Length: 544
Image (cartoon, rainbow, N blue to C red; front, top):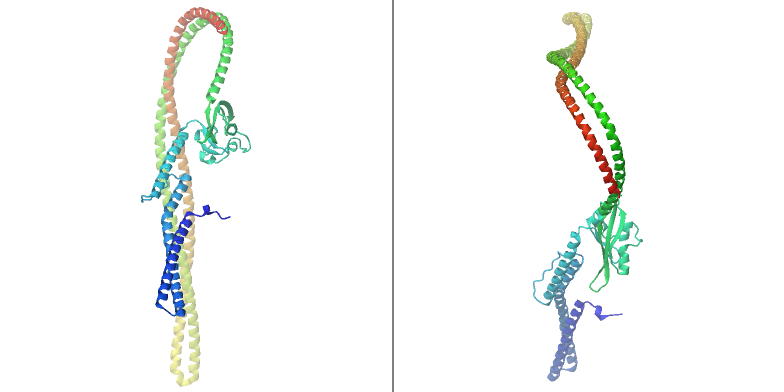
Protein backbone atom coordinates (compact mmCIF):
# COMPACT_ATOMS: atom_id res chain seq x y z
CA UNK A 1 0.00 0.00 0.00
CA UNK A 2 1.35 3.45 -0.93
CA UNK A 3 2.47 5.54 2.04
CA UNK A 4 3.18 9.23 1.27
CA UNK A 5 5.36 9.48 4.36
CA UNK A 6 7.85 7.01 2.87
CA UNK A 7 8.44 9.16 -0.24
CA UNK A 8 11.94 10.80 -0.05
CA UNK A 9 12.01 14.52 0.65
CA UNK A 10 13.87 15.37 -2.57
CA UNK A 11 11.14 13.77 -4.69
CA UNK A 12 8.43 15.66 -2.81
CA UNK A 13 10.27 18.94 -3.35
CA UNK A 14 10.84 18.34 -7.08
CA UNK A 15 7.27 17.23 -7.72
CA UNK A 16 5.92 20.25 -5.79
CA UNK A 17 8.00 22.71 -7.81
CA UNK A 18 7.06 21.07 -11.10
CA UNK A 19 3.37 21.08 -10.14
CA UNK A 20 3.46 24.77 -9.23
CA UNK A 21 5.16 25.68 -12.50
CA UNK A 22 2.76 23.48 -14.50
CA UNK A 23 -0.37 24.99 -12.92
CA UNK A 24 0.95 28.53 -13.33
CA UNK A 25 1.87 27.88 -16.96
CA UNK A 26 -1.50 26.27 -17.75
CA UNK A 27 -3.39 29.21 -16.22
CA UNK A 28 -1.30 31.67 -18.20
CA UNK A 29 -1.76 29.59 -21.38
CA UNK A 30 -5.53 29.46 -20.90
CA UNK A 31 -5.67 33.21 -20.44
CA UNK A 32 -3.56 33.75 -23.55
CA UNK A 33 -5.79 31.43 -25.62
CA UNK A 34 -8.96 33.19 -24.46
CA UNK A 35 -7.45 36.60 -25.14
CA UNK A 36 -6.27 35.58 -28.61
CA UNK A 37 -9.68 34.02 -29.44
CA UNK A 38 -11.51 37.15 -28.34
CA UNK A 39 -9.20 39.34 -30.43
CA UNK A 40 -9.72 37.18 -33.51
CA UNK A 41 -13.51 37.30 -33.07
CA UNK A 42 -13.36 41.07 -32.90
CA UNK A 43 -11.41 41.18 -36.16
CA UNK A 44 -14.15 39.22 -38.00
CA UNK A 45 -11.88 36.44 -39.26
CA UNK A 46 -13.40 33.60 -41.28
CA UNK A 47 -14.60 30.89 -38.84
CA UNK A 48 -12.68 28.05 -40.57
CA UNK A 49 -9.52 30.10 -40.61
CA UNK A 50 -10.24 31.20 -37.07
CA UNK A 51 -10.33 27.58 -35.89
CA UNK A 52 -6.95 26.87 -37.58
CA UNK A 53 -5.39 29.93 -35.98
CA UNK A 54 -6.75 28.89 -32.58
CA UNK A 55 -5.18 25.44 -33.04
CA UNK A 56 -1.83 27.04 -33.93
CA UNK A 57 -2.03 29.27 -30.89
CA UNK A 58 -2.93 26.25 -28.76
CA UNK A 59 0.09 24.30 -30.04
CA UNK A 60 2.39 27.25 -29.37
CA UNK A 61 1.01 27.66 -25.88
CA UNK A 62 1.32 23.93 -25.19
CA UNK A 63 4.97 24.07 -26.37
CA UNK A 64 5.59 26.98 -24.03
CA UNK A 65 3.93 25.01 -21.20
CA UNK A 66 6.08 21.93 -21.93
CA UNK A 67 9.24 24.05 -22.05
CA UNK A 68 8.26 25.69 -18.77
CA UNK A 69 7.63 22.34 -17.13
CA UNK A 70 10.99 20.98 -18.41
CA UNK A 71 12.79 24.10 -17.19
CA UNK A 72 11.04 23.82 -13.85
CA UNK A 73 12.03 20.15 -13.63
CA UNK A 74 15.72 20.90 -14.40
CA UNK A 75 15.78 23.87 -12.04
CA UNK A 76 14.01 21.85 -9.36
CA UNK A 77 16.52 19.03 -9.66
CA UNK A 78 19.42 21.50 -9.41
CA UNK A 79 17.81 23.16 -6.40
CA UNK A 80 17.15 19.80 -4.76
CA UNK A 81 20.75 18.72 -5.41
CA UNK A 82 21.99 21.95 -3.81
CA UNK A 83 19.77 21.48 -0.76
CA UNK A 84 20.19 17.70 -0.39
CA UNK A 85 24.03 17.51 -0.81
CA UNK A 86 24.83 18.92 2.68
CA UNK A 87 22.28 16.54 4.16
CA UNK A 88 24.01 13.62 2.41
CA UNK A 89 27.37 14.80 3.81
CA UNK A 90 25.82 15.04 7.26
CA UNK A 91 24.42 11.52 6.88
CA UNK A 92 27.86 10.17 5.86
CA UNK A 93 29.46 11.98 8.81
CA UNK A 94 27.04 10.52 11.34
CA UNK A 95 27.47 7.07 9.78
CA UNK A 96 31.28 7.25 10.22
CA UNK A 97 30.87 8.44 13.82
CA UNK A 98 28.50 5.57 14.55
CA UNK A 99 31.24 3.19 13.34
CA UNK A 100 33.65 4.68 15.89
CA UNK A 101 35.54 6.98 13.48
CA UNK A 102 35.60 10.13 15.62
CA UNK A 103 38.27 11.60 13.33
CA UNK A 104 35.69 12.03 10.51
CA UNK A 105 35.35 15.62 9.18
CA UNK A 106 32.42 17.63 7.74
CA UNK A 107 32.94 21.06 6.15
CA UNK A 108 29.99 23.36 5.34
CA UNK A 109 31.07 27.02 5.08
CA UNK A 110 27.58 28.50 4.56
CA UNK A 111 25.62 29.93 7.48
CA UNK A 112 21.99 28.77 7.32
CA UNK A 113 19.62 26.28 8.93
CA UNK A 114 21.61 23.38 7.52
CA UNK A 115 24.85 24.73 9.04
CA UNK A 116 23.12 25.06 12.41
CA UNK A 117 22.04 21.42 12.21
CA UNK A 118 25.59 20.38 11.24
CA UNK A 119 27.09 22.40 14.13
CA UNK A 120 24.67 20.75 16.54
CA UNK A 121 25.64 17.28 15.29
CA UNK A 122 29.35 18.19 15.60
CA UNK A 123 28.85 19.38 19.17
CA UNK A 124 26.98 16.18 19.99
CA UNK A 125 29.80 14.13 18.42
CA UNK A 126 32.46 15.99 20.44
CA UNK A 127 30.50 15.36 23.64
CA UNK A 128 30.13 11.67 22.77
CA UNK A 129 33.87 11.47 21.98
CA UNK A 130 34.68 13.07 25.35
CA UNK A 131 32.36 10.73 27.27
CA UNK A 132 33.53 7.61 25.43
CA UNK A 133 37.18 8.67 25.74
CA UNK A 134 36.81 9.13 29.49
CA UNK A 135 35.11 5.74 29.83
CA UNK A 136 37.69 4.00 27.64
CA UNK A 137 40.55 5.71 29.47
CA UNK A 138 39.13 4.64 32.82
CA UNK A 139 38.90 1.01 31.68
CA UNK A 140 42.34 1.07 30.10
CA UNK A 141 43.99 2.56 33.20
CA UNK A 142 42.70 -0.21 35.48
CA UNK A 143 45.59 -2.31 36.79
CA UNK A 144 43.32 -5.08 38.08
CA UNK A 145 41.83 -7.75 35.80
CA UNK A 146 38.47 -6.63 34.41
CA UNK A 147 35.97 -7.64 31.71
CA UNK A 148 32.96 -5.83 30.20
CA UNK A 149 30.20 -7.71 28.33
CA UNK A 150 26.99 -6.64 26.63
CA UNK A 151 23.54 -7.96 27.51
CA UNK A 152 24.21 -11.08 25.39
CA UNK A 153 27.41 -11.82 27.38
CA UNK A 154 29.58 -10.89 24.38
CA UNK A 155 32.94 -9.44 25.47
CA UNK A 156 33.28 -5.74 24.56
CA UNK A 157 36.35 -4.95 26.69
CA UNK A 158 39.13 -7.09 28.12
CA UNK A 159 42.40 -5.80 29.62
CA UNK A 160 45.88 -7.34 29.65
CA UNK A 161 45.96 -8.08 33.45
CA UNK A 162 42.98 -10.43 32.90
CA UNK A 163 44.94 -12.39 30.28
CA UNK A 164 48.07 -12.39 32.48
CA UNK A 165 46.02 -13.86 35.33
CA UNK A 166 44.69 -16.64 33.08
CA UNK A 167 48.17 -17.17 31.53
CA UNK A 168 46.98 -16.41 27.98
CA UNK A 169 49.61 -15.15 25.52
CA UNK A 170 47.22 -13.76 22.88
CA UNK A 171 46.43 -9.98 22.84
CA UNK A 172 43.06 -8.72 24.22
CA UNK A 173 41.85 -7.87 20.70
CA UNK A 174 41.68 -11.61 19.88
CA UNK A 175 38.81 -12.08 22.37
CA UNK A 176 36.64 -9.02 21.64
CA UNK A 177 33.31 -10.34 20.32
CA UNK A 178 33.69 -13.77 22.01
CA UNK A 179 31.04 -15.15 24.37
CA UNK A 180 32.09 -14.97 28.03
CA UNK A 181 31.30 -18.66 28.69
CA UNK A 182 33.37 -19.69 25.68
CA UNK A 183 36.27 -17.49 26.89
CA UNK A 184 36.22 -18.90 30.45
CA UNK A 185 35.07 -22.50 30.00
CA UNK A 186 35.40 -23.13 26.26
CA UNK A 187 31.64 -23.92 26.25
CA UNK A 188 29.22 -21.21 25.10
CA UNK A 189 26.23 -22.91 26.75
CA UNK A 190 27.58 -22.93 30.33
CA UNK A 191 26.08 -20.35 32.73
CA UNK A 192 28.30 -17.54 34.07
CA UNK A 193 28.10 -15.24 37.09
CA UNK A 194 27.91 -12.25 34.72
CA UNK A 195 24.81 -13.69 33.06
CA UNK A 196 23.29 -14.49 36.46
CA UNK A 197 23.80 -10.89 37.67
CA UNK A 198 22.15 -9.48 34.52
CA UNK A 199 19.22 -11.91 34.67
CA UNK A 200 18.56 -11.31 38.38
CA UNK A 201 19.66 -7.65 38.36
CA UNK A 202 21.96 -8.14 41.33
CA UNK A 203 25.49 -7.17 42.34
CA UNK A 204 28.19 -9.52 43.63
CA UNK A 205 30.87 -8.09 45.93
CA UNK A 206 33.95 -9.92 47.18
CA UNK A 207 32.92 -13.46 46.27
CA UNK A 208 35.91 -15.78 46.72
CA UNK A 209 36.77 -18.22 43.95
CA UNK A 210 39.78 -20.10 42.68
CA UNK A 211 41.01 -21.67 39.47
CA UNK A 212 44.00 -22.62 37.37
CA UNK A 213 45.62 -20.70 34.49
CA UNK A 214 46.10 -22.09 31.00
CA UNK A 215 49.72 -22.99 31.90
CA UNK A 216 48.88 -24.63 35.22
CA UNK A 217 49.40 -21.78 37.72
CA UNK A 218 46.71 -21.85 40.47
CA UNK A 219 45.09 -18.57 41.55
CA UNK A 220 42.65 -17.27 44.19
CA UNK A 221 40.30 -14.34 43.50
CA UNK A 222 37.73 -11.98 44.99
CA UNK A 223 35.08 -11.31 42.31
CA UNK A 224 33.05 -8.07 42.05
CA UNK A 225 30.27 -8.03 39.41
CA UNK A 226 27.73 -5.31 38.67
CA UNK A 227 25.16 -4.88 35.88
CA UNK A 228 25.55 -1.85 33.58
CA UNK A 229 22.37 0.17 32.93
CA UNK A 230 21.61 2.91 30.43
CA UNK A 231 19.96 6.26 31.21
CA UNK A 232 16.53 4.61 31.08
CA UNK A 233 17.53 2.01 33.68
CA UNK A 234 17.67 -0.83 31.16
CA UNK A 235 20.45 -3.42 31.58
CA UNK A 236 22.82 -3.18 28.62
CA UNK A 237 25.71 -5.27 29.96
CA UNK A 238 27.80 -6.18 32.99
CA UNK A 239 31.19 -5.32 34.48
CA UNK A 240 33.45 -7.59 36.52
CA UNK A 241 36.54 -6.61 38.52
CA UNK A 242 38.87 -9.29 39.88
CA UNK A 243 41.19 -8.94 42.89
CA UNK A 244 43.87 -11.62 43.08
CA UNK A 245 44.42 -12.95 46.62
CA UNK A 246 46.78 -15.77 45.70
CA UNK A 247 49.69 -14.35 47.72
CA UNK A 248 47.45 -13.73 50.75
CA UNK A 249 46.07 -17.28 50.67
CA UNK A 250 49.54 -18.71 50.19
CA UNK A 251 50.88 -16.55 53.05
CA UNK A 252 48.12 -17.79 55.36
CA UNK A 253 48.89 -21.39 54.43
CA UNK A 254 52.60 -20.73 54.95
CA UNK A 255 51.86 -19.14 58.37
CA UNK A 256 49.91 -22.23 59.43
CA UNK A 257 52.79 -24.41 58.28
CA UNK A 258 55.25 -22.22 60.21
CA UNK A 259 53.14 -22.50 63.38
CA UNK A 260 53.01 -26.28 63.09
CA UNK A 261 56.74 -26.30 62.37
CA UNK A 262 57.49 -24.18 65.46
CA UNK A 263 55.48 -26.52 67.67
CA UNK A 264 57.34 -29.51 66.24
CA UNK A 265 60.70 -27.74 66.65
CA UNK A 266 59.85 -26.96 70.29
CA UNK A 267 59.29 -30.65 70.95
CA UNK A 268 62.56 -31.49 69.23
CA UNK A 269 64.38 -28.73 71.16
CA UNK A 270 63.14 -30.22 74.43
CA UNK A 271 64.66 -33.55 73.48
CA UNK A 272 67.87 -31.80 72.40
CA UNK A 273 68.08 -29.98 75.75
CA UNK A 274 67.90 -33.28 77.60
CA UNK A 275 70.51 -34.80 75.31
CA UNK A 276 72.69 -31.69 75.67
CA UNK A 277 72.68 -32.00 79.43
CA UNK A 278 73.82 -35.60 79.19
CA UNK A 279 76.36 -34.82 76.46
CA UNK A 280 77.98 -32.01 78.44
CA UNK A 281 79.02 -34.47 81.13
CA UNK A 282 80.50 -36.83 78.56
CA UNK A 283 82.20 -33.94 76.78
CA UNK A 284 83.96 -32.87 79.98
CA UNK A 285 85.79 -36.17 80.18
CA UNK A 286 86.61 -36.00 76.48
CA UNK A 287 88.06 -32.52 76.95
CA UNK A 288 90.52 -33.93 79.46
CA UNK A 289 91.59 -36.54 76.93
CA UNK A 290 91.86 -33.85 74.23
CA UNK A 291 94.16 -31.85 76.46
CA UNK A 292 96.53 -34.77 76.68
CA UNK A 293 96.30 -35.28 72.92
CA UNK A 294 97.17 -31.62 72.27
CA UNK A 295 100.49 -32.10 74.07
CA UNK A 296 101.32 -35.05 71.81
CA UNK A 297 100.23 -33.03 68.78
CA UNK A 298 102.58 -30.19 69.71
CA UNK A 299 105.55 -32.59 69.77
CA UNK A 300 104.59 -34.12 66.41
CA UNK A 301 104.20 -30.66 64.87
CA UNK A 302 107.78 -29.77 65.80
CA UNK A 303 109.07 -32.94 64.12
CA UNK A 304 106.97 -32.22 61.02
CA UNK A 305 108.40 -28.71 60.74
CA UNK A 306 111.97 -30.09 60.61
CA UNK A 307 111.02 -32.61 57.91
CA UNK A 308 109.28 -29.93 55.82
CA UNK A 309 112.40 -27.74 55.85
CA UNK A 310 114.44 -30.63 54.41
CA UNK A 311 111.80 -31.37 51.77
CA UNK A 312 111.65 -27.68 50.80
CA UNK A 313 115.40 -27.69 50.04
CA UNK A 314 114.94 -30.78 47.83
CA UNK A 315 112.02 -29.19 45.96
CA UNK A 316 114.05 -26.05 45.24
CA UNK A 317 116.81 -28.20 43.70
CA UNK A 318 114.21 -29.96 41.49
CA UNK A 319 112.83 -26.58 40.38
CA UNK A 320 116.31 -25.37 39.33
CA UNK A 321 116.97 -28.57 37.34
CA UNK A 322 113.56 -28.31 35.67
CA UNK A 323 114.29 -24.71 34.65
CA UNK A 324 117.59 -25.77 33.03
CA UNK A 325 115.80 -28.61 31.21
CA UNK A 326 113.17 -26.14 29.98
CA UNK A 327 115.92 -23.93 28.45
CA UNK A 328 117.46 -26.97 26.71
CA UNK A 329 114.02 -28.01 25.40
CA UNK A 330 113.51 -24.54 23.92
CA UNK A 331 116.89 -24.82 22.14
CA UNK A 332 115.90 -28.25 20.76
CA UNK A 333 112.62 -26.80 19.53
CA UNK A 334 114.44 -23.98 17.69
CA UNK A 335 116.79 -26.49 16.02
CA UNK A 336 113.86 -28.73 15.03
CA UNK A 337 112.02 -25.75 13.53
CA UNK A 338 115.16 -24.81 11.54
CA UNK A 339 115.48 -28.42 10.26
CA UNK A 340 111.80 -28.41 9.32
CA UNK A 341 112.35 -25.24 7.27
CA UNK A 342 115.34 -26.79 5.45
CA UNK A 343 113.32 -29.92 4.62
CA UNK A 344 110.53 -27.76 3.19
CA UNK A 345 113.11 -25.93 1.03
CA UNK A 346 114.50 -29.30 -0.13
CA UNK A 347 111.00 -30.51 -1.04
CA UNK A 348 110.37 -27.32 -3.01
CA UNK A 349 113.73 -27.73 -4.87
CA UNK A 350 112.99 -31.39 -5.71
CA UNK A 351 109.52 -30.41 -6.89
CA UNK A 352 111.14 -27.78 -9.17
CA UNK A 353 113.47 -30.45 -10.61
CA UNK A 354 110.46 -32.73 -11.12
CA UNK A 355 108.59 -29.99 -12.98
CA UNK A 356 111.62 -29.36 -15.23
CA UNK A 357 112.02 -33.13 -15.81
CA UNK A 358 108.38 -33.34 -16.83
CA UNK A 359 108.99 -30.44 -19.25
CA UNK A 360 112.08 -32.21 -20.68
CA UNK A 361 110.08 -35.42 -21.02
CA UNK A 362 107.39 -33.59 -22.95
CA UNK A 363 110.02 -31.93 -25.19
CA UNK A 364 111.68 -35.29 -25.94
CA UNK A 365 108.31 -36.80 -26.76
CA UNK A 366 107.68 -33.89 -29.15
CA UNK A 367 111.09 -34.43 -30.75
CA UNK A 368 110.29 -38.13 -31.25
CA UNK A 369 107.03 -37.20 -32.96
CA UNK A 370 108.83 -34.70 -35.20
CA UNK A 371 111.43 -37.34 -36.28
CA UNK A 372 108.57 -39.70 -37.10
CA UNK A 373 107.02 -36.96 -39.25
CA UNK A 374 110.38 -36.38 -40.98
CA UNK A 375 110.72 -40.16 -41.59
CA UNK A 376 107.30 -40.18 -43.21
CA UNK A 377 108.29 -37.26 -45.43
CA UNK A 378 111.55 -38.99 -46.41
CA UNK A 379 109.56 -42.12 -47.26
CA UNK A 380 107.45 -40.04 -49.63
CA UNK A 381 110.61 -38.53 -51.15
CA UNK A 382 112.06 -42.07 -51.66
CA UNK A 383 108.86 -43.19 -53.35
CA UNK A 384 109.03 -40.15 -55.63
CA UNK A 385 112.69 -40.95 -56.48
CA UNK A 386 111.76 -44.58 -57.32
CA UNK A 387 108.98 -43.38 -59.60
CA UNK A 388 111.30 -40.83 -61.17
CA UNK A 389 113.96 -43.52 -61.82
CA UNK A 390 111.33 -45.78 -63.36
CA UNK A 391 110.03 -42.96 -65.57
CA UNK A 392 113.62 -42.11 -66.66
CA UNK A 393 114.22 -45.77 -67.61
CA UNK A 394 111.03 -45.86 -69.65
CA UNK A 395 112.00 -42.58 -71.30
CA UNK A 396 115.45 -44.02 -72.26
CA UNK A 397 113.77 -47.08 -73.78
CA UNK A 398 111.41 -44.93 -75.81
CA UNK A 399 114.33 -42.69 -76.91
CA UNK A 400 116.30 -45.76 -78.12
CA UNK A 401 113.32 -46.82 -80.16
CA UNK A 402 113.12 -43.37 -81.71
CA UNK A 403 116.68 -43.72 -82.99
CA UNK A 404 118.53 -40.57 -83.93
CA UNK A 405 115.54 -38.36 -83.26
CA UNK A 406 115.35 -39.46 -79.62
CA UNK A 407 119.07 -39.19 -78.85
CA UNK A 408 118.78 -35.81 -77.09
CA UNK A 409 115.78 -36.98 -75.10
CA UNK A 410 117.76 -40.11 -74.05
CA UNK A 411 120.54 -37.92 -72.64
CA UNK A 412 118.01 -35.96 -70.55
CA UNK A 413 116.34 -39.16 -69.38
CA UNK A 414 119.71 -40.57 -68.32
CA UNK A 415 120.49 -37.42 -66.31
CA UNK A 416 117.08 -37.60 -64.64
CA UNK A 417 117.72 -41.26 -63.77
CA UNK A 418 121.11 -40.42 -62.24
CA UNK A 419 119.54 -37.59 -60.26
CA UNK A 420 116.80 -39.95 -59.00
CA UNK A 421 119.44 -42.52 -57.96
CA UNK A 422 121.35 -39.81 -56.04
CA UNK A 423 118.09 -38.73 -54.43
CA UNK A 424 117.39 -42.32 -53.34
CA UNK A 425 120.92 -42.65 -51.91
CA UNK A 426 120.55 -39.32 -50.04
CA UNK A 427 117.12 -40.34 -48.82
CA UNK A 428 118.52 -43.58 -47.39
CA UNK A 429 121.30 -41.67 -45.64
CA UNK A 430 118.83 -39.16 -44.18
CA UNK A 431 116.56 -42.02 -43.08
CA UNK A 432 119.48 -43.74 -41.36
CA UNK A 433 120.33 -40.45 -39.58
CA UNK A 434 116.71 -39.98 -38.54
CA UNK A 435 116.54 -43.54 -37.23
CA UNK A 436 119.69 -42.84 -35.18
CA UNK A 437 118.09 -39.62 -33.84
CA UNK A 438 114.86 -41.47 -32.98
CA UNK A 439 116.81 -44.21 -31.22
CA UNK A 440 118.68 -41.55 -29.21
CA UNK A 441 115.43 -39.73 -28.52
CA UNK A 442 113.78 -42.91 -27.21
CA UNK A 443 116.77 -43.54 -24.97
CA UNK A 444 116.56 -39.93 -23.72
CA UNK A 445 112.78 -40.27 -23.11
CA UNK A 446 113.36 -43.49 -21.15
CA UNK A 447 116.14 -41.82 -19.16
CA UNK A 448 113.94 -38.78 -18.57
CA UNK A 449 111.08 -40.98 -17.32
CA UNK A 450 113.53 -42.72 -14.99
CA UNK A 451 114.70 -39.31 -13.75
CA UNK A 452 111.10 -38.11 -13.27
CA UNK A 453 110.29 -41.27 -11.30
CA UNK A 454 113.41 -40.75 -9.20
CA UNK A 455 112.37 -37.13 -8.58
CA UNK A 456 108.87 -38.29 -7.52
CA UNK A 457 110.41 -40.87 -5.21
CA UNK A 458 112.75 -38.23 -3.78
CA UNK A 459 109.80 -35.87 -3.29
CA UNK A 460 107.84 -38.53 -1.41
CA UNK A 461 110.86 -39.33 0.77
CA UNK A 462 111.41 -35.61 1.42
CA UNK A 463 107.71 -35.21 2.33
CA UNK A 464 107.96 -38.14 4.72
CA UNK A 465 111.13 -36.64 6.17
CA UNK A 466 109.31 -33.32 6.60
CA UNK A 467 106.39 -35.08 8.32
CA UNK A 468 108.84 -36.92 10.59
CA UNK A 469 110.56 -33.65 11.49
CA UNK A 470 107.17 -32.03 12.14
CA UNK A 471 106.30 -34.92 14.47
CA UNK A 472 109.67 -34.49 16.14
CA UNK A 473 108.97 -30.75 16.44
CA UNK A 474 105.56 -31.45 17.98
CA UNK A 475 107.14 -33.91 20.41
CA UNK A 476 109.85 -31.38 21.30
CA UNK A 477 107.21 -28.68 21.86
CA UNK A 478 105.16 -31.06 24.03
CA UNK A 479 108.29 -32.03 25.95
CA UNK A 480 109.17 -28.35 26.46
CA UNK A 481 105.64 -27.63 27.67
CA UNK A 482 105.78 -30.60 30.03
CA UNK A 483 109.19 -29.53 31.35
CA UNK A 484 107.88 -26.01 31.92
CA UNK A 485 104.84 -27.52 33.66
CA UNK A 486 107.21 -29.56 35.84
CA UNK A 487 109.22 -26.44 36.63
CA UNK A 488 106.05 -24.51 37.44
CA UNK A 489 104.75 -27.39 39.55
CA UNK A 490 108.08 -27.61 41.35
CA UNK A 491 107.97 -23.88 42.10
CA UNK A 492 104.37 -24.19 43.26
CA UNK A 493 105.33 -27.20 45.36
CA UNK A 494 108.17 -25.18 46.87
CA UNK A 495 105.76 -22.39 47.70
CA UNK A 496 103.29 -24.95 49.07
CA UNK A 497 105.98 -26.56 51.22
CA UNK A 498 106.80 -23.15 52.64
CA UNK A 499 103.12 -22.66 53.39
CA UNK A 500 103.02 -26.12 55.01
CA UNK A 501 106.05 -25.17 57.10
CA UNK A 502 104.33 -22.00 58.22
CA UNK A 503 101.13 -23.98 58.82
CA UNK A 504 103.10 -26.47 60.91
CA UNK A 505 104.47 -23.64 63.01
CA UNK A 506 100.95 -22.32 63.38
CA UNK A 507 99.75 -25.81 64.35
CA UNK A 508 102.44 -25.92 66.98
CA UNK A 509 101.25 -22.57 68.30
CA UNK A 510 97.62 -23.69 68.09
CA UNK A 511 98.44 -26.87 69.99
CA UNK A 512 99.76 -24.78 72.85
CA UNK A 513 96.70 -22.60 72.71
CA UNK A 514 94.48 -25.70 72.53
CA UNK A 515 95.88 -26.91 75.80
CA UNK A 516 94.96 -23.62 77.40
CA UNK A 517 91.56 -23.70 75.70
CA UNK A 518 90.81 -27.16 77.08
CA UNK A 519 91.06 -25.77 80.57
CA UNK A 520 88.67 -22.98 79.63
CA UNK A 521 86.33 -25.54 78.02
CA UNK A 522 85.84 -27.32 81.33
CA UNK A 523 84.46 -24.10 82.76
CA UNK A 524 82.33 -23.53 79.64
CA UNK A 525 80.85 -27.03 79.89
CA UNK A 526 79.63 -26.29 83.37
CA UNK A 527 77.98 -23.13 82.10
CA UNK A 528 76.56 -25.11 79.13
CA UNK A 529 74.89 -27.55 81.50
CA UNK A 530 73.26 -24.66 83.30
CA UNK A 531 72.08 -23.18 79.97
CA UNK A 532 70.58 -26.54 78.94
CA UNK A 533 68.51 -26.55 82.11
CA UNK A 534 67.37 -22.98 81.42
CA UNK A 535 66.49 -23.92 77.80
CA UNK A 536 64.39 -26.82 79.03
CA UNK A 537 62.42 -24.51 81.32
CA UNK A 538 61.93 -21.99 78.48
CA UNK A 539 60.58 -24.70 76.12
CA UNK A 540 58.15 -25.89 78.75
CA UNK A 541 56.82 -22.34 79.14
CA UNK A 542 56.57 -21.91 75.32
CA UNK A 543 54.60 -25.16 74.95
CA UNK A 544 52.18 -24.07 77.64
